[in-house]
Length: 239
Ligand SMILES: O=C(O)c1cc(=O)[nH]c(=O)n1[C@@H]1O[C@H](COP(=O)(O)O)[C@@H](O)[C@H]1O
Image (cartoon, rainbow, N blue to C red; front, side, top):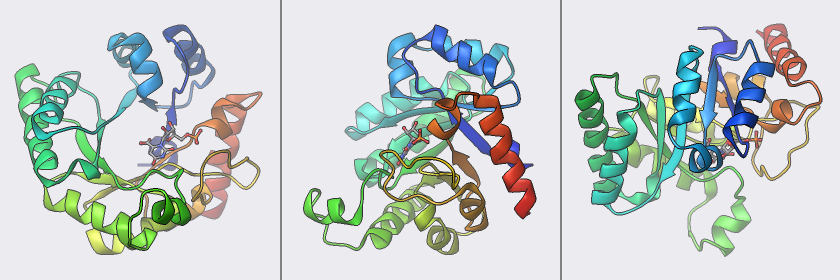
């Protein structure tokens, strides 16, 4: 797989029309993320639009609820035939286990391939300071992210979402078969915005990420396709 297929562009826009406009401006992008804003706005229709254009889909709904409820949501989401699906690790062991089983059941019901179920460890917008003083978690941030990833792995999930700053440690502890997806990635020329723990695309891949999620540096650029190409060229230059 080349780097172009490992960069996921989030369609963080308000409606179907805006999403399609972005997809049409980004003709070389093969993998898109549908998150809370767009899915809440359009429902599953947007997934059909992307599939009809042969795009891969990361359905990022970040489920977080009691075991019975997340299992139901995962069963329903798995029927869509998407590639990646998210749940918060802090849903706990029982919910993660139930979600893993539900994803298989939902996909089997619909006769589609099950999505890879991946756990959010700690949102990349949060800093060490916020972890300690707002969330009152008495662990160092890298240790906390690692604990969440290990719990997800133990419960049978396929991977985790983490910031590029933690990815090397997670890769070392979770092994090569565990998928690591990194948002919070910023080329040197882009603004960080609300991302607290970021590295460049090349650094994130070098540290062991399988996929990067890169949004505003591409989607908010005056020419999104040009920004995308610049990122891809910078990656080629360092590999
Ligand atoms: O699950 C995610 O994709 C996610 C997890 C996380 O911890 N941090 C995070 O930023 N994201 C998503 O990754 C994308 C990052 O977008 P940009 O900050 O614009 O590159 C957004 O769609 C976020 O919802």
